[in-house]
Length: 401
Image 1 (cartoon, rainbow, N blue to C red):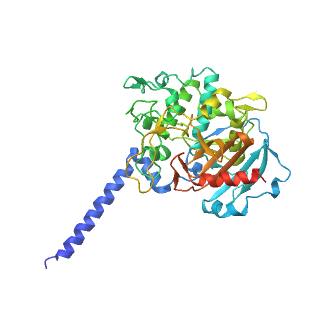
Image 2: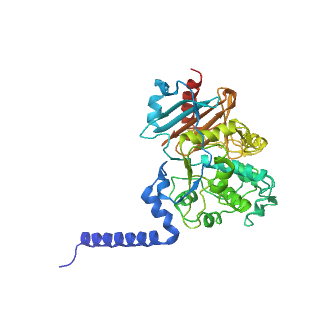
Image 3: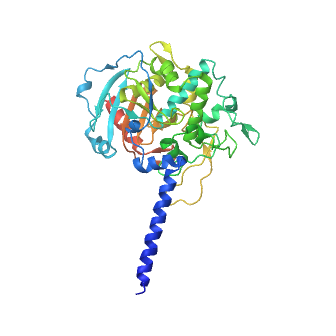
């Protein structure tokens, strides 16, 4: 009896499915696709994923607790913010004013000791370490060529690539910044095992120092420069130059790649809300802590001043089709963001899932928000997601009570 057409089609489909499954298995078994397996297993990054990576301690060798306002235990966020705090899965919120904790609140079983990933807030810490390395004479200045440390990157169209170009996200390299795309370099950096090998694939594709283009690979290049300049891993250097001097209460953990034991400098510094707040207080103090100049004050000023000489192409609003003309970059310095909000100029750091450290010099205050989600809608003029306004409003309400 001859097989029917339907039977032949089913057999062909089954055979094709087997071929696809075998092909996928072979693809995923290749060492170069290690990160794809891990990405498929864990999917989008999460704030408590330090446990799936190897980590290096950033030691806190001189811990000293925060001072607390007398009524801190009775203060909570105002009721009008509760729905949004829950909607975006907030886990920690701290407000510091006049060097004292005036509000501290946690959700979802988080506590003052709970570790949370900084994600891209880590970039700002790397920037501070660059400032320390300049003071130490390990780096001459922000204008030093990158090729002095990483000979692989020299110049493009006659323009030398400098450390300043990396700090201001104007390196002009080909790095796709996306955590949601499986095959992006950012996904491979996060879940992969060889950061050095990955950065070797970066290429200069336009003149550096001209256009702002946010790229995590650029921050990772800064981490490699720090390692080469200081002769130390950046966890040890961070402990010596910042974490111990600012009297962090707990050791932090910096997640590493698997092959080289290199810190994921562009992300993945893990600590608690109280100690994140110390980084904000350090910026508020213009680099000083308890009378000791930890980071040069001039570097802090430059790092938190927008790089307005850079061009920026604004995102299109819904319904817009024609590209907007380039405008000056008014919201980014040396791996620090800057926002103008309600008449306040606020330097801040941020991470992809809504991690923030806000520094408000006019009010002598710091606000820290940690959580698992953020808004999808952008303020395209200042390049922030709209949830930023929630955390600032809630913190300012506490400050102004």
